[in-house]
Image (cartoon, rainbow over all chains, first blue to last red; front, side):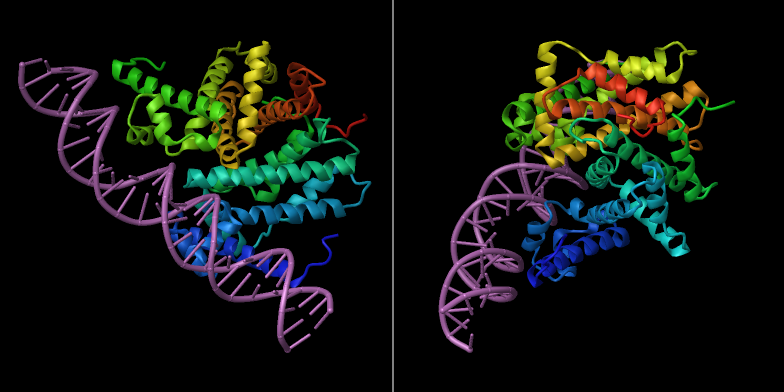
Length: 201
Length: 201
DNA sequence: CAGCAGTTTTGCGGAGTCTGCAATTTTTCG
DNA sequence: CGAAAAATTGCAGACTCCGCAAAACTGCTG
């Protein structure tokens, strides 16, 4: 699959990646309001007009890397042993996507702050996460023999996993982290698997 | 609570509501691309500049009614008996918000089609649903004695309920409805309460 | 390797969004 | 009423986004 990537395709992908990377980097480093299409295009060495051939808005470019991330994670889900419970696969893949190094954390925090400070970016991030969720649902449907056009199940699983992940990240980033992100995610997954019982005590 | 609504406040609210209603109506009736700020402002009898005192984008106005809906549902949750299990409260409130009449269904479908056809509107709808989720989490935290700044629980409950709801609506709207929306939502809630077990078909 | 067909890049023009600012009008309240 | 506070409006300006058509580039074929 994804065979036959000619030079042409590769160049297009490279241009797109360069634009996305430039947009994201500029947004984090200089603040979203200072990121004009002109600046992004200049950083990626193309004309402003070309930018709009790849992305339909500044915000879309800023959050585009989320889609790549979704792609990678979906691939990983598909590569998990077929007899592994889907829930275990998801937890493993999500946790595996986290980098515990200090710099990774710093980068993550900067990223989150940048997004949270700008409603238009939040909206686009949610949209990107939503297409990610849809891909997940497809992969899960294949794995569990369900049908995304008929069953709630694959959508609920994908959504619940995404919910546990996003909720954990948000809580983790919102204050002095009392617990590690790994712990929070495991906890979130556990609560959902238990049917979200009324909290003891 | 929400006491002391002077004339001023009421007029502001009315203007906002008029703008939101006009934006949404025009979007559904004439297609999003034909809805200019000028047209919305004209329909609400204010100047285009005033529109931007209330909403920071066209899309925000189009989906603004979701926020009102969130407000109403949150109030209803708070009014449920304090000893009712939170999950029962949520199911009751969500199902109670549905209108089963034929016209309501038609309106809902038109609305959904309008949104799905326009990525920028999708993004803003998701953002609106996200602020709705946050309000829910607050109300749930109060009801269950948890802390939104410390516990995953209220966020997970609010998110899971929203997920069951949105997933049901999306599935219901995506094809010939084999099951009623009420049924789908009840099913979604039940699956989540059961911890989303692998489907034994 | 010349040439061609398909694709991508680019510039330009134009409609529209969105914001800051300052003037004007409206509302509230003593 | 008369001042203070708040909301509306017009205007100017920067920027976004898209359609269109010309120019540049790529991969292939004879």
